[in-house]
Length: 180
Ligand SMILES: [Zn+2]
Image (cartoon, rainbow, N blue to C red; front, top):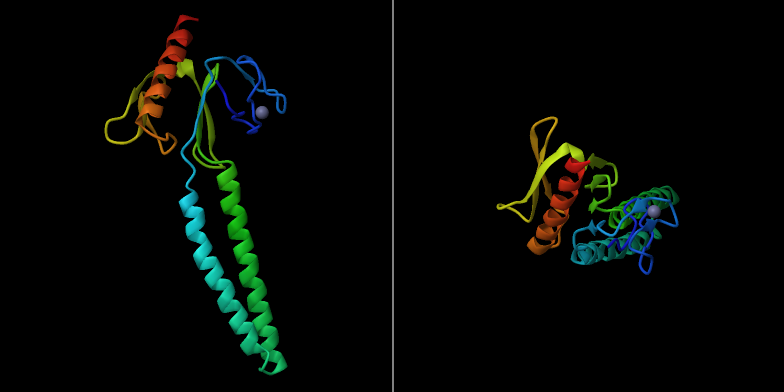
């Protein structure tokens, strides 16, 4: 079952297993499932320290700057503004990535792959010959028919059990696609 829409991230909880996303209209069925990595809250928390330290230093600099001639005060203020904008931009990027991170979804017609905000792929099930659980890492490996190439799907599963469930579902999709 889909917990959220892979296209717009609208929550689909409480809706029928086979439906359309009320927000963007994307169709899904009971076998559709979305996989995503465990969010690294530790990373967000790790950023708090340096940011707080940076602000503290900034306050000290501005405190010192008050005793300096006018020209220097301006420079300090400009520097501070640049620093704060940089932090804001960095925080915004982090938030965007957090909100729209990596996913794999077993949609009715295609396998949806997104590793970051910019790259999203929809690979038709008919174009995949098979999918296996990887041995070397937590993830899966798929074999593409047309290009006869192998692609690794990693960094999107919480654990090996997640990857195994994905492979089970992908196998069903691939089998159905080759019947049609
Ligand atoms: Zn949607």
